Image (cartoon, rainbow, N blue to C red; front, side, top):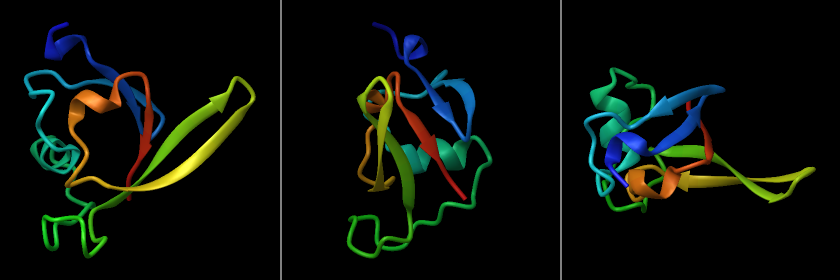
Length: 86
């Protein structure tokens, strides 16, 4: 699978990571896209400044919402998932 094949939903819209790498953090990718509402504080996942909402499907009719540190989340783990930012 090529990085361009990785698709996910960001703030309700379909996205592909494009020229990004699967190991690049979601925070870095967001900033490269010009989406700077999600901030970087410590870069280690301790402060929570980079928190985003990840929708985790538990069942076809049920979804769980998770607060995730975007500085620690590799783009490759977003395939088929849904993320909401500020």
